[in-house]
Length: 479
Ligand code: SF4
Image 1 (tube, rainbow, N blue to C red):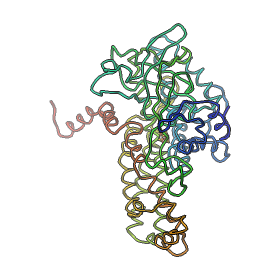
Image 2 (cartoon, protein in one colour):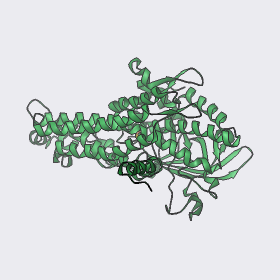
Image 3 (tube, protein in one colour):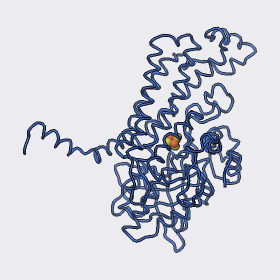
Image 4 (cartoon, rainbow, N blue to C red):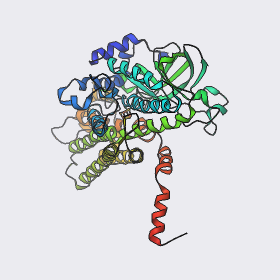
């Protein structure tokens, strides 16, 4: 069982994942400078769970075993669990300033728990009992599970079975007496290179003819045929040769996403939780997406808190903190951060019990929260750039600061207020740059689904008919 950060690192060393980084197979991910920051962020979920002051948020009582378990492996038993999830995410983000990855698998297990129960009710299958056995194993081992949903999708105007290459959506290519053979890929998989297992789920609603794509199963990431290709991130190579220029050197910029490929991977039936039930694919996708969208005001709210603090510090170092327009911008940033957090708390507070017994957040409010994140985080970043100044785009290299020839010139001409070191000023400016650039922003837009996916949910669940009826009634229209 994994308890400490050291346990986690050791488990990754022995796992032997096939991870490719910049075209080369990585021999030890725990010592790779491009992957280690993401490992550190995920490790925070183990470290904080051991701190007594965080135990209530970071752990929970398993409804299966009665044992104290990581909250990331827990099935929500009530509204309090839903709220604590959001509080936990904001808290951890304060420590990492970036994604810590484990929520995707967390949302996956909750979505699959509810949906396997419903499939069994309709078809008399035994998926739920299988999944509960798997869940106990996951809870007991305290593994990190990737929530594997997004397929590459190829030509998006075509369904899975209409694609020129049928593998562009993950599918079952063979059913055997002992299990299935899986082929395909999952894209943008948060934390995949430093996780233990992946929970494969369909990527969208399916229709007749798409049965091989209606598959949910758990696959160890070191299974034969699994290949991971690490995604390139903005400025990631700064972590190779510098601490200051990396901005947030201990942790990743986002979640360390990877393309996970299943090259004919065998999965025993015991680990298969949906196989061909196309009518439940869309339901599972919607549940997973709702629960991941619930999170975004928590983790992004927490990341925004760090960024707001960095902006205030930069302003202090530059002598502008007392300026009224700076204080106004900081207040605006706080308003936006609290707004997204309020959305996550609201959808949790308005959650309800599903037939499986697991609790589920209000889907309209959860989608609205993520939608606000895709706007507000950009606005928070815009205000951060405004406060920090153009210097975040023109700072010299750390090596210039360290240079025996020109270091003193960098010290002299990049100095801020008296008493603050130039190095500290550069550090906080680099942190702002890291938290507001490239990959970090795109993650707020497309993580947990693009804004259009949220609009589809309003169209489905936004009760437009009811709204029209209300308008007609007040206007006196009786047709
Ligand atoms: Fe968790 Fe946020 Fe990362 Fe998603 S983006 S895995 S919710 S920390």
